[in-house]
Image 1 (cartoon, rainbow, N blue to C red):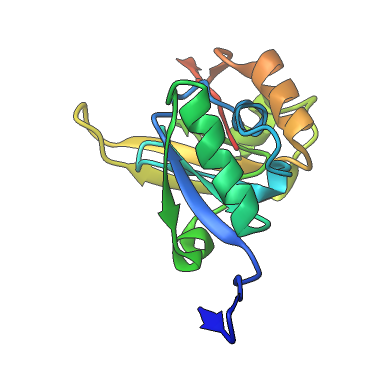
Image 2 (cartoon, rainbow, N blue to C red):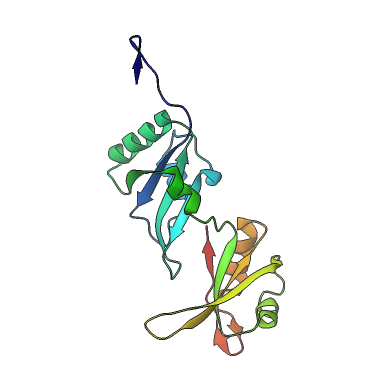
Length: 174
């Protein structure tokens, strides 16, 4: 927009969607890759498929200049990731999973609590549900941890453990 010979730049957040991420890509990886954009983990949300595989990462840039710096950074570093501009509505509908771990389960809530004994988590947050897969439906649980560090502690100490004679696979959702 031009007004009396001066350009007025819009202020506020600009949103982008970073694709080509893998299940091992973390928020820290994206923050380091987009250096100089003034980002922190609260500016990122991971988008997951129905089976909780990461498909992209939504990024909230504090300004248009930060978004432009990110585009330049991606071009300069060889396009390891791709980024397109996104709407605020897309940012708003992306659920943040900070500190949650998905646990495929064949158990009751009491069994999940026993499995997670010794870990610090919010016991009132346990959500259990069924996900359809090609091999048939699997039962899963989402558990909220107070921090990402405590979720990683549960992953390190409990992943591949057994609950009701079934091996449990944990996944930390960002």
